[in-house]
Amino acid sequence: MMVRVANIADASTILQFIKELAEYEHELESVESTEATIIASLFSEGSTAHALICEVDNQAVGFAVYFYNYSTWLGKNGVYLEDLYVTPAYRSLGVGRLLMKTLAQHAVDNGCGRFEWSVLHWNQPAIDFYQHIGAQEQSEWRVYRLSGEALAKFATA
Image (cartoon, rainbow, N blue to C red; front, top):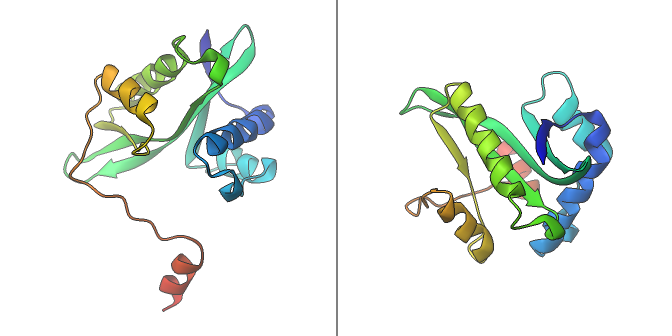
């Protein structure tokens, strides 16, 4: 089992993982990503998002997409995990843990003050996993989002 930095040849695999994750989260119809948008957003010059691939016997079995955020209180960057997905047949074998550990080490190596992510309230297997590795829920915060028409409307109001 090994984790490597994703490359442009992984775009179709990443898209497949995104769709599998969306299906698990009952949101497949919300996926707008294409191979072209993945290539543009993850592998173009100046891209602000990055991806890792976990392989077992040279087969991609999981991925993580992350980007840097910033803490004004710490005065440091942080790593924000956007997506973590492991193919069902490889769950509970350490793939997710290895991806998370790799990102945690990346954060430490780059002087980041935090490693954060969000999890759906109903996703108890993920919550259990995150608690098992020592993560703490930040229950005092609520996530808000502007997107689509609401974002465009507010931006031009």
